[in-house]
Image 1 (cartoon, rainbow, N blue to C red):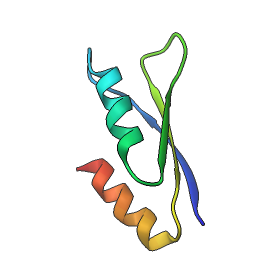
Image 2 (tube, one colour):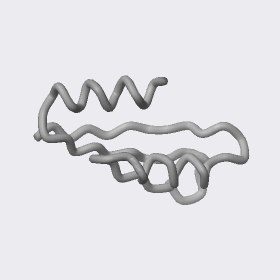
Image 3 (cartoon, rainbow, N blue to C red):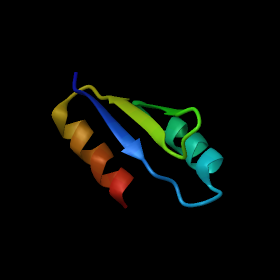
Length: 60
């Protein structure tokens, strides 16, 4: 069960929308960093193959 963490840098004015979209994804939990314009994304997928699929969808 791979667990990874990422930093997400949203475009100006869309932080809340990105946070909502990331939390809607399976195997993902996103949270806002206080006093910063970045998000932390933690993924917990059942296997490495699923993690790779998720990474690809995050980049697109």
